[in-house]
Image 1 (cartoon, helix red, strand yellow):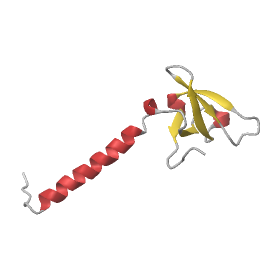
Image 2 (tube, one colour; image 1 turned 90 degrees about the vertical axis):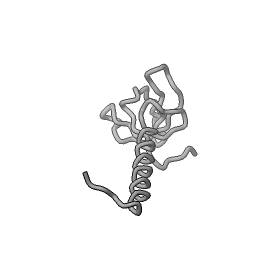
Image 3 (cartoon, one colour; image 1 turned 45 degrees about the horizontal axis):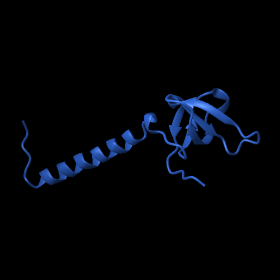
Length: 93
């Protein structure tokens, strides 16, 4: 077993803290933590794949209502959490 000097130990702890921070950030993006007002990318259905939309409401325990704002027809989708991906860096208008 390799031994580390006392000088290296604080750096090792800092790396673990930074890694834990990344894990916590990734955990925050779990589909189960979607909320109204959040911007999302649509993964399914295929005709809307990649569209950017905003969650407007929770339809029931498993589905969300997502409005695609740029769509000329005012597209409103009812989607399950696995069909959505949180859009990073987007804020409500």
